[in-house]
Length: 196
Image (tube, rainbow, N blue to C red; front, side):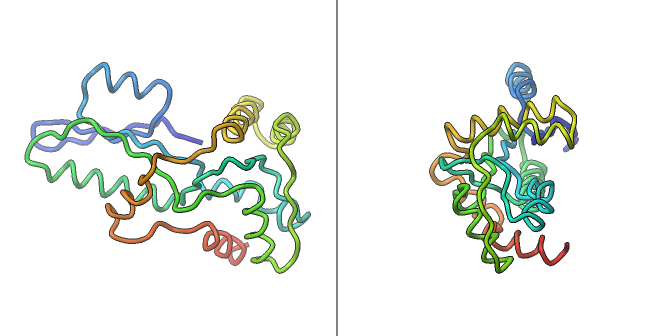
């Protein structure tokens, strides 16, 4: 789930904006010709915490991510990239041109690969709940606002059809910015289980 919160940062006589991408913010930034960086994050690994009890308690991974591949990203990597980009802009002697960063993780995950990871981490079988986005929306609506459940249904349908991953080299660019590897889903799962 992407945020549309914005913070404006002054750097000398210019104003730099770092804002997460949304359907309304991108055209707004483009129309105003703001020297900004638009962050376009893929599905956050931390979203899995919403379904962790189901995974651990019932042995089912209920999120219908399909088989096209999702380059899930750890929210801590998003924060680190945002900081690096804000510092880059702040330290620049002149306003930098508008840029867009695709924030993706280092691996493409599918329903099948995710359940293998959870199964290995838990030491027991976890099954994939399938690709029925309508059923997923119904389950989500029992725990969250209906608008959010509907939004998640649309997102999952898009993920199943197109996948959710950046252009070739997107993860490599982020790793170069950070000077370290991006966090992997397997490590996130182990940490989530240890914290539960």
